[in-house]
Length: 233
Image (cartoon, rainbow, N blue to C red):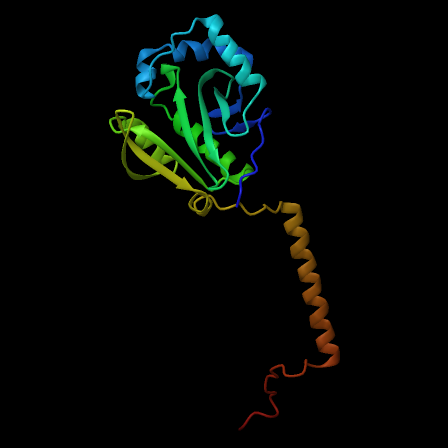
């Protein structure tokens, strides 16, 4: 099965704590402050950017104006609209129906409070219900136990440890069939009025059927109780 992935420009996914949305130009200032942060870069196994803000803006404008069909970037907001981080699924391979996932909560005020886990869950819901991607995988540093716990809560399982570019990572993955098994579709609720109507209709139908059987005799093959006259003494 091939992934028919189109560039996403109007994405919005609401979770319990976060809202995932498409990237906009107003994200640039926060994004830049996180990209030049040495600690955040270290957690991402990369180096801080050395571009000036003006230079960075050119790249940011291109990302917003010309989204790639093989990489979907999403901002992470709180429910009240505060931009606290970003996530993305990228390196989308159509022949394998898979992609890699990455996330960063840049605002330290929201570390360790469940916002990252909620954003990952929302991203997976979008990926597995709105695209044909069947496998999502990620790499996290072996020493980043907090991230590994968060990913596990969202449904990822550890595959193995890998070495890449001088870093040691834990490879984790989740497949659509496993995600779907743990997220059954809720059954439509029946309101009280509809339920009462159904009960009433059923009662009327049963009463009519009983009246018909009394007048016409028991149905063929139906059990007939013994009458008093036919009982043995």
